Image 1 (cartoon, rainbow, N blue to C red):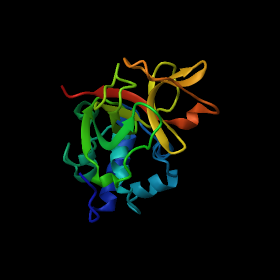
Image 2 (image 1 turned 90 degrees about the vertical axis):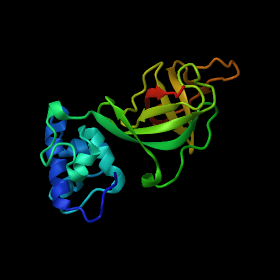
Image 3 (image 1 turned 120 degrees about the horizontal axis):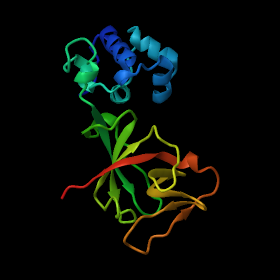
Image 4 (image 1 turned 120 degrees about the vertical axis):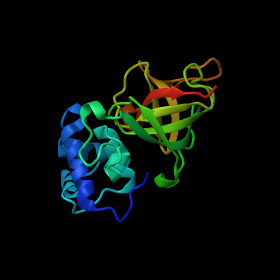
Length: 219
């Protein structure tokens, strides 16, 4: 569901404020929400006062971070006008399927299509984060994510942990690999022995798009 330009900005702002103060059981400050979205606290304050409205693509991110249904922010469909109570929260995350990511050599990254043109996927129990979904191309990670599977990437989690899977981007190209720190490398996890690690120079955290938290495959 997309934001409609005629929606009352004050109603939307009130819902953002109510959801932020509930915060999935733990209140979230305007500064915390602003930092997550990459905007200023003044912008969040303006939204909540109804002086402006967030961009379309930010509304689903706000809903995911505050753990309320996007539909409730937009039209109150989940629980009437008041913010959903903790026991009533759906625990659903609305994630955009952003085309594909190579599980092989560094290659061109995701689709550049407008966000509103990309399909939405709905997932339960992802927790707080900023998620995108990607289709895996190639077999260099086929032990956990075969070619054609879908991975969920939390762009809010960029802390590198040894042995965990991430999507990396370097000089406009992307890949899906495990992180190994000694020596620093992007490590394949494959049944195909042809794949080799990509060794990293410089600060590897500058390459992280996000941590892969879930993989799905239709049988």
